Length: 496
Image (cartoon, rainbow, N blue to C red; front, side, top):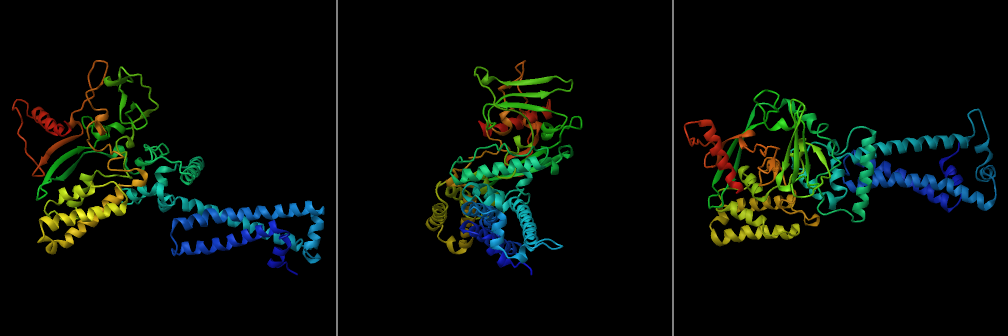
């Protein structure tokens, strides 16, 4: 007679510990199957339900399996009976009697063992797959990762899974990432994490293994035309254009060196910074064709006893430090929305008022939304009441766009304000390129690293009313040189 499941359950549930173990294994197994079916049907997509499904339920299942033999051991010790005697009292002779295929109990235990192994294997694989999803990374630890999740979803890499940059290839990288993730969960649970999260992130995979799988430096050649539009704070939000020809070559071709020369695999640029933020550079070393090394020292730091904690070989993220989780500058954020038509430029003083609304407060999202709404509506109600009927929809749309900008970039709980995380692609004074390309970074002959803007781009227009501005050279003696000098002077005015 076959050993029935309920009979087997009664047999192994020898005391309260055994019963608890059986309840945990059975209930967690059934619940896991139920939730997994719902997740596969996409009826449930919530990450917290995923945590319960893939972390809590398998853990309870394992705990239940452990409790069952513990219950048997406790009962054996308390009764003084052997395991064989206990089996004889819990199961009938038909269960224990050996046949050609073995005892019914042995076959049942073997069957359940195989089911348990299969279940735990599938659960483990599904757990790893779940933890590789971007939704898990962004929403499971909501309070900590909410800012990164918000910026990730509107980034150029929103279709690239988090693990492709944050987790390396191979078993070692997987184990390290999970150990690091376990510590992050502990930090989040015990409120041990820093606010804001410090950068740069050291757990990122090398850019040679990530960025360069899609962005191949040796294939960056030629030039790229780029036009930037800023809007003035006047009534018409007048546009001004800056147009650049970006030289993106990597220097493979003689005389064609451009921006990506820095990461050509034939060039090695090393540097050391004062602290972990990599903002103030102590020295830069560049390998020369003859095998020598040319060193540039920051003369501002000569008198300081500064020891670098890190010597880095320059790669993609030294410039593209916000390639994915991009926090915007408020003025550039408004300019971008006006250019895209999300904010109607025909609204009087819309640039000025939008920027003022965004900068009015650093508070919780709901209060900020009310401030933004009141700021715009009050301004147009007081100064342009006739527009409320004609342009009311455009005002409401601008309000909603600004609320979204605020919610994406400002996260009070994590102490993230405007420009908390600087973007080194921006040409702010003493930032970006100017961390190295400045007059303080000199070689042994006191010659500074070249900071001529035309090294990386030609300027066709700068804050011009037209996208392309024709500039006459200062002198006809050397037209190209004179034009470069003039353009450089004009370009650098914004940093003085």
